[in-house]
Length: 274
Ligand code: PAF
Image (cartoon, rainbow, N blue to C red; front, side, top):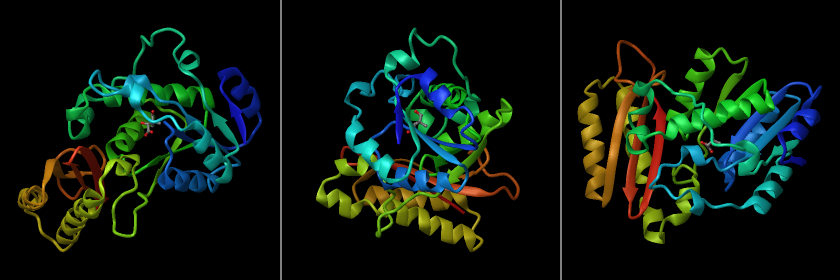
């Protein structure tokens, strides 16, 4: 695997490389990221990953400096997964001067769900991803469904700005008990780890019942929220939404159920398409 910290060198290395699949990350990789790298291989001649902890997507109360930086371990895992190129810029390379031009996603897409508790987050994500796309110029880009709202925002950005990139979604990778893999799982105590799959079980229950024809979405959301609260969680939301824009369901739109809740000091998110 070639590692390139500089934009110009990466561009030279990629010129004439053929069809490029790109997986952007902020490092601190787990098996979900590695599954995306392997999936990327099926879409292209070369696989490019990036590791860059993007300051723009952190709010003033979120600790950008404390985000885990595990470069040695991450680059070894990417190499083992068969990634061809790793773009690993530092802050000065990506933001040599303060970034004054930004992507501004539709507020209806970003002021809800995760965006309601992280103002400005998805604008920061969209801005860095557009910049990374301009640097790497991929044919295909892969993002996990675990961050469903991020995936939705980026799909809409690509479509509305007519970027010549196919966005491919990777399935969420789960532990045997259903818990979605996330770097945050490492913060759970043993007792919290045993409790954590309840979030997935509640979403799966809603998936089953809506699949079986139930249409009282508010009741399903309220029941699942109460069940989590009864087991010591602090739920932020359990929401049945349409997949395309995460707005309230209309007509026969394809649906997804999303959940976010705090267990102790750890905030977990998950979702299931219905
Ligand atoms: O999902 C992430 O790790 C980040 O939001 C991304 C897409 C790499 C942008 O910084």
